Image: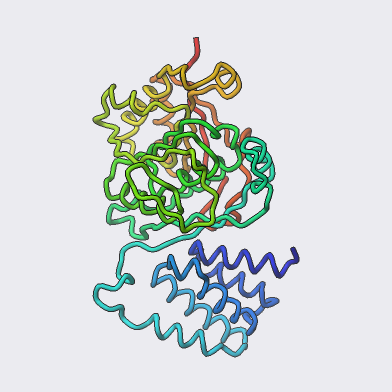
Length: 373
């Protein structure tokens, strides 16, 4: 792959993921040899704005306006002639949307391009006997997300810690293949999509918000992930393990009873960006402690217990308020859990490329377990 091909792919991936307009312009200039040449503009117009994925699952209208405006201004600044197609399309996007139009919807789509590490592909090929995993192909996860977190749609957003935890899942298939996985605060559902594609035996995705659960089910559907109780879809070329059972369920930490906890029995618990509100931390820790203390030998072999130490939880946390993290650590210790930071020792490969919002240095991954006798 030569340099120009790589820039092509990175530019398209950045646009699909709604990367900041400044990054789109920077990549387009790299494509054009330092300026927004007619070739760079043509590529953006034909391959990005008319990309099949983006046409089917469009980015936000305001985002498209900003990108087009900055693209035109940057081309004019560089002294290159601006293509009529960019002017025409910008004028169309400036028109007020019709009442009832999907353009007025509070949500839009981001499509994340990801690579499967070579060691992961080799592991899955060995486990499944399928040579298709050895092929180095482009993979996508498309998510309907909310850009307005002020209206309570935090569960429908793509949080940085969730992106890093996605890379962690892609980098360590030996932990998840054939296992029962539970995600707490599953949000938009990206990790659930990846767990299903990597061959987990069961994926239980939970969230406290019914609106978030509805959006999550939509995202699973458009990524061709069959969900229990929903009609299956078959319009995706992405690999999905047919034996994986996926379920979505409401889970309210504060009111969870012992019977419900036993129904959540899983070998692996996952979660990302769960401790932003200190008032919920004691409830979260109680749930984690209960799940990690459940003894279910029928589902875990002695070899798995000794090698992978199931049951186990992996929690990704963006460092925003150090005091909140300290409080979480203290509550974990009081609950009698063992907590180890594995951000370095199990560092995931950068499977999602250079996502602007993903500052890996500011995100920690902790491994939690009950102390063994």
